Length: 291
Image (cartoon, rainbow, N blue to C red; front, side):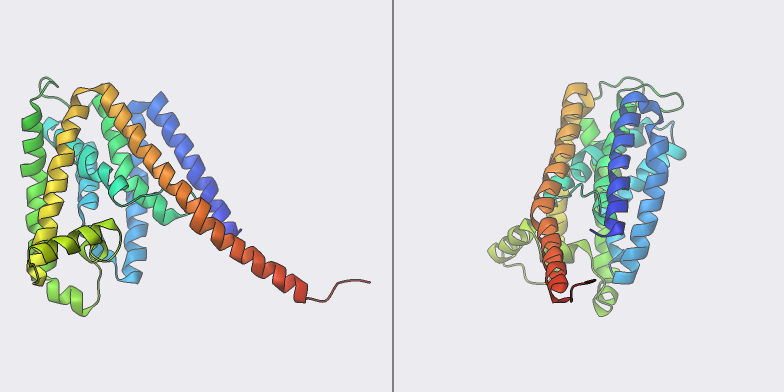
């Protein structure tokens, strides 16, 4: 086992323990724990992705959702509307992406831990603020019993639709040729080549005869929108129920742990079994030491 793996594993376990403690014992201060991690982890991810030609993945939805969360926490705390939009997207498509993309709580991998953080911690932030009155933060204006359809409409029109239109125009139309020439990867490239989503999108393209690049990307964005609206619709339930919100949080957390278990007992164990076998073979080839 590599020393780096041990170090990241220890840090990963400590992070989960401290996160659980703060969320339970001092929920009003959880945002102070969330903020520095968000800044550092996104900065590290940008640097590592830049080296790999994947930095345009940071234009995707979850990063912008995390950004509006930070804007609310540190600039627009008095805006109940911004919090409610943040709630909808964090408890909608961002959280459900843990299931859609099999995000895994793999303690020794900073890449996996970063992905889980970006999709799960905003959910925890909204949980701590929604159910614990925090001085200086406006969550409801004036009452919290808002019409679910209005919550869904606000999340869609004030954030989801602007992001979809902006992303499609910038990434696929304005910068489309530039990204192709430089082989820069976008999330569209990833979801159409790997995982169950690739099969679904390929089947849709064939079923409706969608062949052009821009047309395929438009279908992808439409599916993204449907996914977002459906999951934000479910988020309106969590807004009105502490029990439902807590159960949802624990479900997403459990899913990330379950995904990690599959990794540890297959990929990770096989990798180290191979390494141990190679060490045994090497030891057998070495001459005995001493007398």
